[in-house]
Image 1 (tube, rainbow, N blue to C red):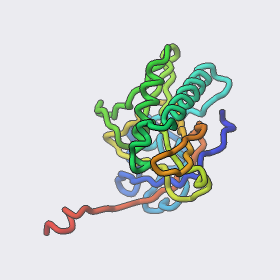
Image 2 (image 1 turned 120 degrees about the vertical axis):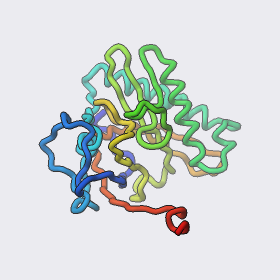
Image 3 (image 1 turned 90 degrees about the vertical axis):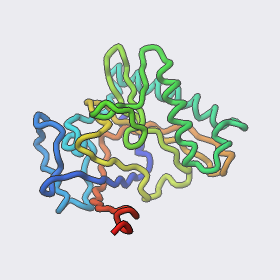
Image 4 (image 1 turned 135 degrees about the vertical axis):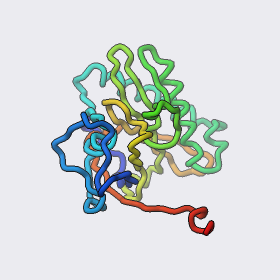
Length: 235
């Protein structure tokens, strides 16, 4: 599965919480030999996802291993349910065709994948709880899949993309690093499931999903300081 092509050339932006220009670690026990990420000097650089997760959550990103039976079981289950979901949502009169914008369809895929995977023997699929135990829909990742016999965990992030945009360099994936409310709390596989669509507004047809192992993904660091209208106009 390591040979699967990367879904898009993903440019990911990270909004980072830091102290003295450095990332805050979730746990002092999460030691690493990699250099600290410095928001003062590293903005614009590409940083491995595995480094980002280690330094912001204290967890390890586990590569998808085609020789590992538990990893095989997870990839087969995800592929099986993804086929069912995209076929059902491509049918005329499907709930997807009742939506006006493709962004509104994403939740349908997420919910259908969650229900389908959770119904399989030996599997659980839920919204990953945050480090404070809350159920939170927003933010990476969308789903937590567990192979129950081996307690192997995979974070799964479904995405929809227009088929002819696969080589686009626009940002389509991002991870917002927070030191106190992250949804990444375990050593796990990190998988992205990309569903191509034909761009036919309101009558979308969805193609075969691409399962992407994110363990080798490099993210582009973007440091951002922001303000709301409330901040701007309440003076």
